[in-house]
Amino acid sequence: MGKGVVVTPLSANVRHYHGEVEWFTCVEDILESDRHRMIGYAQQELGKEYARWKAIRLGLRILFQKGERQRDELRRARQLFCSQYVAEVYNSVGKDLKKGVSDRFMSPADVASSPLLRRAGALRKSVAGATEARRSPGR
Image 1 (tube, rainbow, N blue to C red):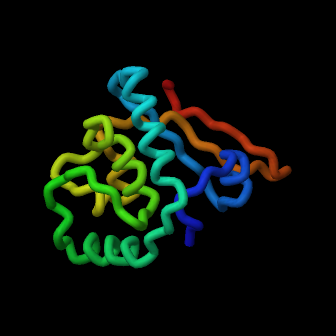
Image 2 (cartoon, rainbow, N blue to C red):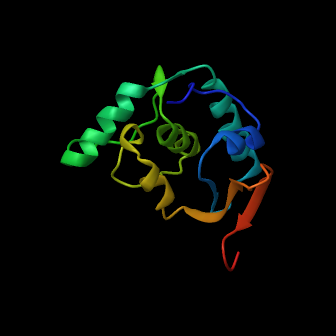
């Protein structure tokens, strides 16, 4: 499980991750001022613990299809999990990654299938251990 909300070099994440690290870009223009607000919001969340039990609860809610359709309001949590963190950063500038699903119940699949995001490519470890980048076709 993760260490919580920390800043680490992307190359370190790729090096220690078994699989591909996908990256996405927003299909809508984001004003420079909004980008700064997103960064500010993300930085304010640094140091929060990884929400292991929330992630487990999310998995159970997805499995049993319970409670994910709640009002999506931005509120700071004491603990976060990755897809919740991403959704909240976008929500901080009024961009709701998935209508009808609260950020608290946002799954990685919800982030990946958001109509606001487009997969730009993937990073993975090469056999030699260096980081490789692969762009999505047609991008």
